Length: 75
Image (cartoon, rainbow, N blue to C red):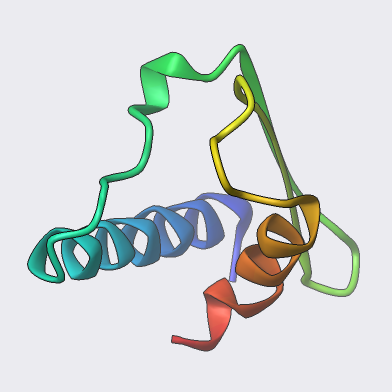
């Protein structure tokens, strides 16, 4: 799978997660436009390294963010 395909897969999974939150009546993600910067790279062995800098998100710990990205591709 090439880099563009991986990014498209990541985008579609993020959209599915957003839709699940909306159906559950939970707060939606911050809009992509609120990110100060983003960087998504694919490592040699196929893993994806995503970096996003947002303002602090109330009630979300670094451990929660780590879990999110570790489990995002498992859906």
